[in-house]
Image (cartoon, rainbow, N blue to C red; front, side, top):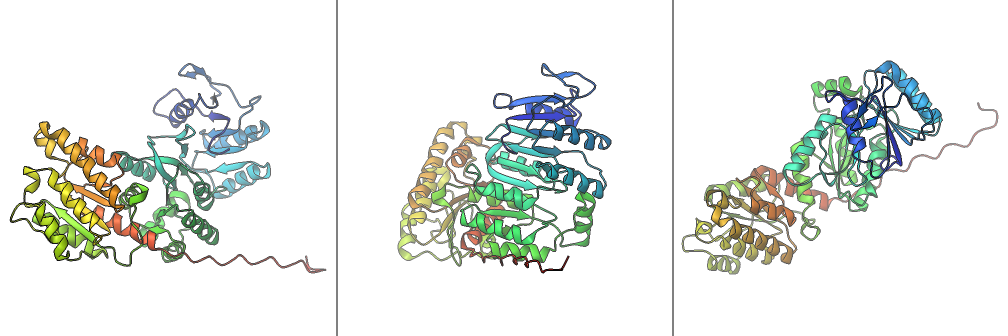
Length: 469
């Protein structure tokens, strides 16, 4: 199996931390409790007490990672094929396109598969397979990417929010395994709850559309990044992987028809993923115009939050008189009891007012989501004696969302405090900027409302005609 092989060999292993072969070997060794790991370097040496072998001859190895100079790639692959290897991950870059295609033909003709060349490897956190450079925290996002550094950026953003990867596949130049196939493998992968991809060249658009449709049908949202809206981006992609960039408008149309969401940046992808990874009972549901109730401990922040959601297509409706009265009962005189709700400092005197007001709005039936904006999560920073109480209120906020079965989204000026850890641990997405929260929620609602169109069937091949070559 590509993602859970019984044995792995890293060819080009190194004991020097500055080299790719070092990180690939270290990652492979981390999975020794689950599979055999062989390290190969014809010059000899060792890493963590594991001696380097001179070659692949005589090894029964299922997956070979190739990180050697370009001139040695073909001989190493030939040696691996002779030894019975079934998968090759080629990290080495710089090859001629014709040579890369010939390499792929050689691998495929022997019944094996090729990932790359010019890729950063792959990771499966569930099967302890780490054949890449960099940190890949475990989580529920499956990422397929033609850019290694972009994957690292996404990983760091996910880690800061307490999330990570189920799988990561670096496509490189896609001479065999391509984006559609890598995404298809994620559709039925139970630990993957959100599919994400950065792709420059989609190769087979119809196949991609069928995979995106299948993901939507399986309840696996797909978040996509691509390039091509400017000549500069298309040129950069061509020099990066040699890709013939797929027309952006075509990709956008495929996403629209297939129930996927096309986004603009790694940050938007992560923000939306966090919203989608909220507790299942609190995911946004399909609404023509989602109704948002905003609760702020600052009039300015509440007003800006209302605008941020409104300009992205959400409604910020006036509360009914009955709901406004219930909100007023939880607040001191002078607080703003309409939408957006202004706590007017009530939280400083009584942290519990956050949970009471949010709970009232979540239960009211007048909002599809409640957004908390401002200071909550930061009270213990100024007064450590309030840590336990703020964490208790964070739990009450999560309880209220769970009881109502509606999303609670938190925008806060704090970062990495105990109360925020409670919220994240209970499936409540937390954002540092209000525009992040607004983009994530409205994007998740668009996904929930998508109605995919089945892609056209491929034409049947014509039967051969006698006498025609």
